[in-house]
Image (tube, rainbow, N blue to C red; front, top):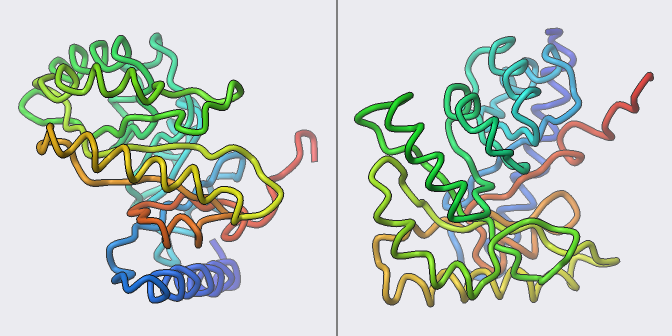
Length: 237
């Protein structure tokens, strides 16, 4: 970890936090209510350690195996799984990450609850429910109607803490075109909490291309990769 690389991350972090602050100010929000998760997928361990050294301590990974490598090879970070989780990797995920943002079915939640009781007895493991509010066939997640039907059972699972909702927006040419997706997730959260107040308030939405719009619409977590780490390394590069 070189001092120059850490300094680069400090500058990138300050720029992104500044943009979050400006977006929050536009709608009268306190920017301290927004958590920046730095998504480090495909970047090597030494780069991630430099990011941690620059204060980017909330980190996201898409794949369980890559998360294992990063968690074991770095120190000082808190790790979010933000990509799809296969049922057969549920135990390993619970062993290595701190938050699973991508719980996309009742069946997966039940499995995580059972295993969490074995792996982390006495603790409620934090999760978010991934919802496909954009009705995008290319994206995973609960259908909004399905999550409304399942939410009471999800909240009753004894070993999980359902801290809120997450979505991956439909790719659009402009950030503004992503706004309806973020509005829909916020409105769903509010509707669910009206009858299920124990559901957490977290809204994980917005990435490099649209996180400012997500903040304007109530995001409490933004997942930012390229604006912090630059373009991802290409295979074989």
